[in-house]
Length: 261
Length: 332
Ligand SMILES: Nc1ncnc2c1ncn2[C@@H]1O[C@H](COP(=O)(O)OP(=O)(O)OP(=O)(O)O)[C@@H](O)[C@H]1O
Ligand SMILES: [Mg+2]
Image 1 (tube, rainbow over the protein chains, first blue to last red):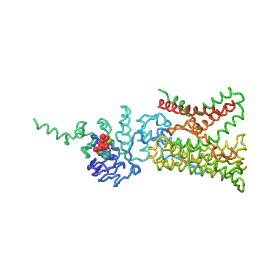
Image 2 (cartoon, each protein chain N blue to C red; image 1 turned 180 degrees about the horizontal axis):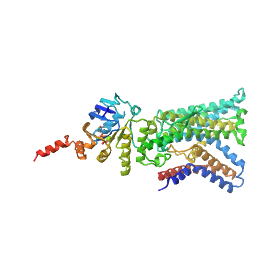
Image 3 (cartoon, each protein chain N blue to C red; image 1 turned 60 degrees about the vertical axis):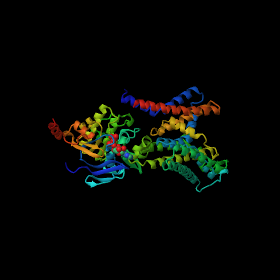
Image 4 (tube, protein in one colour; image 1 turned 120 degrees about the vertical axis):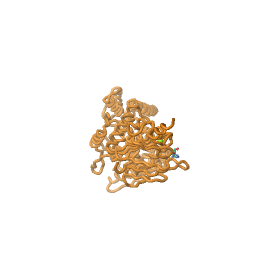
């Protein structure tokens, strides 16, 4: 792999006496999907919030695009191209898809100094972005309130890519979605990554992690308990990493098993 | 399941429901009430819609942004009184004159805009910076601003507005009085602003989801303050028009307008939830109220009936809002 998009070195964070993270190292490459797994309270959300500027680490370094960065707020992280996508929270359901896509960054043309919205230009830009990502939405002129949770997520992700996002963070993005919508959501995530975007996705569902991730990172009690390529591991092994049953490789294990009578 | 086509039709009807109701009511009245269907009556309806109409624009914008402004009526009362005191020659009027004479027009309008804008900015500041409930803040303004009207007038009135201003209420264009044109112009301008500029788009999005708007980099606090300033300034214009129409001002001028403006906004399709509504609908709502009022005048119904019917209309409007929301949710 060439230089990583994001590199975390020895990130720690405590909340008073609680040590939520105690020295996490993590790398995310361009176009790479990293699934973060771990038990409840392992520190996954805390880690993701630190990356997105929502929390500051107590210690450790964060290197983004080769530069050491520390984000004081989500807005700063966003300006650098890092964003958390939350379901619904970042959309205005009372306006249409186009308006949401261009929220706060509308294309305008000034007439006598008065900025006027350029609907046609915005429409075709959204149409193109959606087509690039293979997202199909019945009409870009429908208000977002009429769209499914999965479609909303797709809009947010496409919007993120369109506006030059580089690393997207997803904290249990499919928790509220049905089977079919989750499948499409995973598809979208894959396509986003294929456009060169780094993705960190937190999930509790093993199958999702294996379906979408290039690499699986397991957090356990605030440290990285496993960091494996998805293609080279198995759900069983990941479960063992999560529960802390064994921090050894399957090879070691067979050897051990082989020795005992 | 409904097709996108059917949905579009239902959406269109819901969006423009009040225009359909207005056309229906006008048709019924024209058929049922003798002497109703004549130009004079229709012009009267438009003229009557001037004051509540202008006031309703600001109120609607604040509500679309997800807030509330109960102070508009008192603000109009205050600017009417200030206009009256400055430019009336009898009563408590001090009879200010200017050369050239027409200068009083922009000057008085400017004063009305400024006074309204200042009160609006106080409301907005309290709501945004001190995070107070818009309902309570503007209820308080409703009370203290009316108190101020009483204070500066001593409960007395101003009469005989300077002719340079009076002319706005007398002269007509296409047989519609100039003041009614001012209202129509206000609707056209603000409809454009709300529908075609980033400002209007952002106001609507803030009403829909302030958190998302904020995350998208929209200056939510600033825009909310601006909506209150606009609402105050527009209410100021309503008061200015009121003074012109009455050729002066009394201490209780404008009382009761809040509820009609409120009813018009809700009937016009603006949801109290915020984020939903268009200004042309609000104008239709105002026209509808004036139509009913005029019909009751034509039929010579006693005033207390008018009160009761208006009350019932406000309730009906709120019900309609709920029903429309329910239908939209079903559609989703
Ligand atoms: N703001 C906070 N104040 C105090 N403690 C916190 C705070 N946020 C997280 N913690 C603690 O830090 C630890 C890690 O929490 P975190 O939310 O990161 O876990 P998680 O891996 O996302 O768990 P889950 O799978 O349940 O979402 C927990 O012990 C939690 O109680
Ligand atoms: Mg979590």
